[in-house]
Image (cartoon, rainbow, N blue to C red; front, side):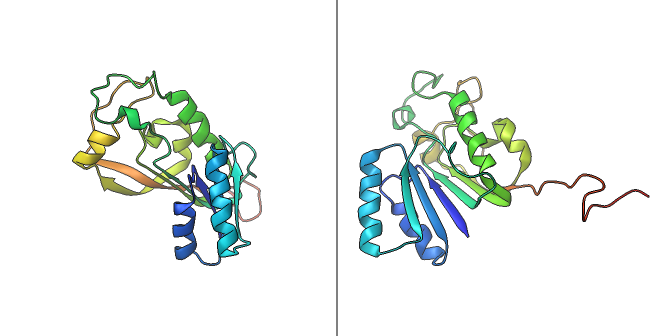
Length: 187
């Protein structure tokens, strides 16, 4: 399996993924060069050649249809939005940037691959990219979620907090055009 930890911080998520998937190739991406230096130190101590880290703010440079799963945990959020009664997040976050980023992530995910997004100030289901996915797992929104990670819509305005929120999405396998090998043909 090929796994991507997007916004890997100092590598805790990558270390957890390694525990669950001992044979996987895992890449961590983070915008902070300092975080990536820390990740590389941890990797070198573990002597794990199947883990690598890169400094990047997006997945633009990642290969198309490459990853089996992408994890984005507490990445698409801003801590200063928690605990305040914000009608808008536009001064700290922008839905357009979120949508561009998840679109790039969906492009580097294999068909039938998993996209895991949790603790985000935006809903993946509000993006155009989500039309290529099925939600396969949701979870209840807790009072702590509502306080620490309020939700905002495509207009960057506050949303009422739903009782459940999708967290795991499977990218649909692309349909083969008629006449392609393995496709059903109407004869």
